[in-house]
Every structure is written in C-alpha cells, then in structure tokens.
Length: 507
Image 1 (cartoon, rainbow, N blue to C red):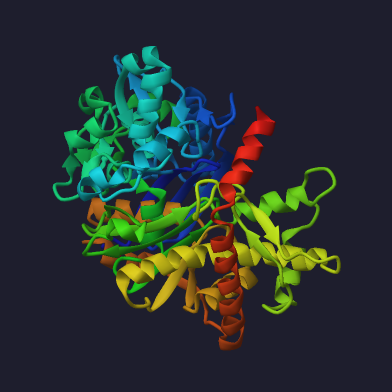
Image 2 (cartoon, rainbow, N blue to C red):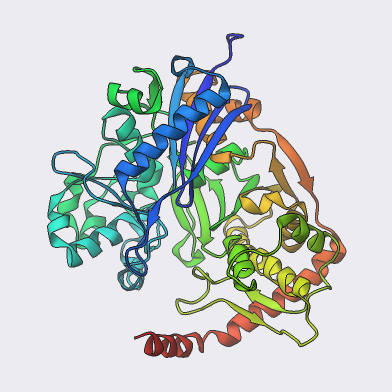
C-alpha cells in the first residue's frame, strides 16, 4: 500500500440528519458536516423531501466538509453514498427528479401493508421478507391507487443512496442489498422476481427497476454538474454504496455469526450475517449482505427516539428541559432496583401488536422524575431484548459480543444497561460516524486498497470500549423483563379497543 493516504468521501443521507464525512484508509475521520434532513409533512403520516433542495444541501455540506478536512476536491479518491433503507425516490420518464421523494418514516400506506402482511406466506419463500409500510412496492401500490397520474409518470425507482449516486454521476443503478430489503428480489437468484410485483399489484413497475449492482461496484464517476455542486473533481470514482443498516454492521466489524450488530437510534435495529436464512415463523427479515451472506434482521421503531420524545412531553413548554450530562448522572447513580415502573417504547410504532401504543405502567405517587426516566431507558433496552431474543432463536447460541451503534452509545451508563439487560458483552467502536466508516470501508475494497471486507475492517475498525454484564444487575433485569413481557401478553387483546376509541375521537 502507498504511504500516501487515500481519502474517501461518504454522503450519509438519513431520514433525520444528513452527513458528509471524509475518512482515510486507516479509518481516521478527517471531517464531518451534518444538517437536518428537510422533511415535509404535508398530511398526517406523510414524510417527504424535495430532491432539488436535498441536492443543494448536500452540495453545501460537501464543500464544507472538504474545507474542514483541509482538502481540495481532486484529493478525494472515491465517493460512496450511504442512505436510509426503504422509502421511495423516483425519476420521471425523462430521467429527471421531478417528484418529491418519500422517506422511510412515511406511514401513509399502513393499511395496505397490513393487508399484504396478512398474505405474506405467498411471497416469503421468494423474498424471505415480511411486508413493511415503507417498502418500495407498498408505496408504489399506494401511489397507483391514490395518485394514478403520478404513477403513470414514473420512469425509474431508486433507493435513497442510489438516488444520490444518480445525482453524482447521472447513471441509474440499484444496489442489491437495498433492493432485497425492499421485497423486490428473489433471495435465491439475487435478481428481481416478477411474482413479487404481481403480488403487490404493480407488474408494470418491473421495467422501471434499474440494473442491480453490488456495494463495491464502481457505478460511474463524478459528472461535471455534480462537481460544480459539490466541489469534488470530475472523474472521481463513485461506488455503489449500501443502506445504513449494512454500513453500520460493516463499520462495527460485524461480518459473520460471531457478532451481532445493534443500532439504538431512531430505530431499534438488530442484525447478524448468516449463511442461512431465517424462517418466516421467526418474524425476522432477510436481505443480501455485501459480503455475500444473508443479513438476518429484527427491527422496529422502538428505540432511543422515544427518550427524546418523552423528555419533551415531560417538560413545560415541549422542549427538552434537562441536559444529557444530567441524565447520565441519573443513570450512573442508580441501578436496576431504582425504578419499578415499566415503559413501552411504542411512540413511533411497536414490535408486538399492530394497535399497541406507548405506555407507562406501574407508576406510583412517590415516583420521582429520575425513576420515571430510568424506566424509559429500561423500556428501550427491553424492546431491543425482544429482537435480540428473536435473533438468538435463529442462531441458537449467543454471539461472542454485540457491537453497538446509534445515539444511545453517547451514554456509557445506557450501554452498560444494554449489556446487563441482554446478558451479553457490548462493545462500541472508536469512530462515531459509523455510516461514514462503513462507506469508507466499501470504497477501500472497491478501489483495491484492501482485498475484502475482512481485511478492510481489520485495518479500519477499532473497538473503543467493552461493557460486560453485571450478574446481579442482569438477574434483576431478567425479572423486570418477565414482567414487561407478561404485561404485553395481558394487554394484547385490549389494544384494538384503545385504537377504536382513538379513531372515533380523532374523526
């Protein structure tokens, strides 16, 4: 390898924030510039973004990231897009981004998704996926039913990061992992399957699907228009990239069944790469992982985002009234015995019943703010345990460790709680921007700096901290988790009554 450093620029476009990160081939982060993803909520359940505004914002952030790193555009060796999974990014028949894009947090098609999931046994042997509200085919079917003129104008359909790559290069491709996570791909062949399009009632969309590529494939280079917007030199190689779940797993060195990847952020995401697919009865999803394995996933919107929302709800003016340093003191100065309430982190969705909602159960007049907030932290960890238990039933043994990422990792006390609740050692890595690191690892393999993901990870991923379970705390959490699970079982038949009441009052 040359002594001169390679520089990789990664555009990590999330549904909440977008970041432009520059790293070198050792995994050293040189700069990061972040801005909020400018989502528009025109109607309840609708979450969209204007593609032209998004592109302008990315251009500004890219120029700023180059400046912060002390680099010029011709010193970037490769560019990789990383993006949120699912959602819908469309080009018209002329190949222009003339339609607003749909984020993965959009829930307009929930009734359709529920109806399709009731019949998922018809397609699970093909895609090995359950149906989710934000997947391509569900959203496309909704547009077909409700906006037929827009549907008729669709020329190409892309994932988030594939859309960004199109803006960078002018070339239209779809990366295999993203497509397989969208219920579009036959996991046996690795190609689109017309039976999936027929199932969702969108057979005419099959020709709109771009050719599939692998994460480390070069898919063009920076075009002149993109160079003017971003400051990156014309001709700089652009690789396919991956969606954020894959990127975080690879960034944390989760490349086989020895480790689990747990992301505790807006979403509760728990995965491991496997040689075999999870069965439909497991409740898990399967997608194609960049290493060639299958990624087994158990996830739901039941993670750290609930904490921020609860803090706003408990404040006087809807703003967070307590800082994270003070919250860390609350956690680190108490333990599993301190709070006896249970929190269901279902403010954005749930992982138990279509009608289940967020709840605090077991509160007493003597409970303090600190005890209530600790219950919120614990509830998020319990929701992750539900999904980790799903993965353990598939794998049939514990991993050697869990590599953790997401906003929860900013709290050492919370990460320790995860280790105690899960009963498994939890490790964090040195680089904070894991989407960026995953993209940089992808670029290093694509350019041939390293021969494969294993070699790249060995050089670029560094474990920062290790948290081992405290047996005494784990024993208490086991009892609390049993109560958490039992209460969910008791409430299972009652959620629909609550939902009916809510709909009647909201109409």
